[in-house]
Image (cartoon, rainbow, N blue to C red; front, side, top):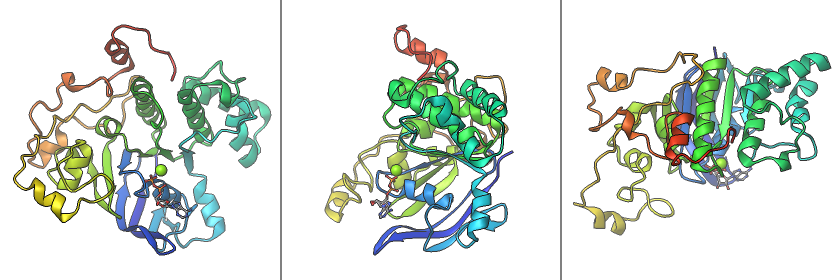
Length: 336
Ligand SMILES: Nc1ncnc2c1ncn2[C@@H]1O[C@H](COP(=O)(O)OP(=O)(O)O)[C@@H](O)[C@H]1O
Ligand SMILES: [Mg+2]
């Protein structure tokens, strides 16, 4: 089912440095949301604040009626049980094999017997395509497999909310495509709320139901993916379409001279909105909407060519099978 996360007027600083201020958004239950933003804009800080590892300076994070910003340690401990987290590097214990890494939260947080633990670990290994690798050490497998193992571990306590910190960082485009398909399939299967932090535009364009963009110490926009992919708002438009013309410069904001130089410069047209990835495991996703539904309901004309199946590119193939075809027929690994 998944649970909703309601963030209101959230601000976070370290010393005198404001990371972001007045962030408000509601992450809908059971849906996949992506938070985008340039490096260093505080995406990881936002994830850590949402699970209560960091305290905000102001604002609230309401989950099942509890405000994580003000609740007691005991309440926080209870709320944390709702979360599974995939950290950026997979955060595996290097000296433990995958089986023991994945079993770790069950041994720490439950009183389950070793045979019950075994059944759960095997189920999560199967879900993430890792059956047969349980005796390997994290150092003996690829980066993509380590991420899958981190994901298997994030799932062992049957979370209602799964947070992903840059699941695609360090992966090549084909492995990213496999991982993105796995995220869609898992969402269909476990029906939890997914929040994915990334700076990968292809992931943002093809995976989520909702997109947010953190920029220049605030949340520039958050809403259904078609709303952002059809948006003419300068920062959103520039970032989601990887364009040079716009308010975002090399290091942060462009200065007045740089912006003045762009006056009258024609913006490239918005690219077509690609199809959203669909589950490949035959399980429908409750929050998956008809292509173009949001645009139709809001009287927005999507860019020409939107929702055509031919718009998938090498780095956002629609299915693993298509990913294989798009590598020119060369075999691709069965697991990432
Ligand atoms: N524990 C901390 N103490 C002080 N500064 C921090 C801490 N964690 C993150 N920061 C700072 O917060 C900013 C945002 O970091 P981060 O959330 O990691 O960015 P992103 O994930 O978007 O790349 C950076 O300037 C970083 O140096
Ligand atoms: Mg980060």
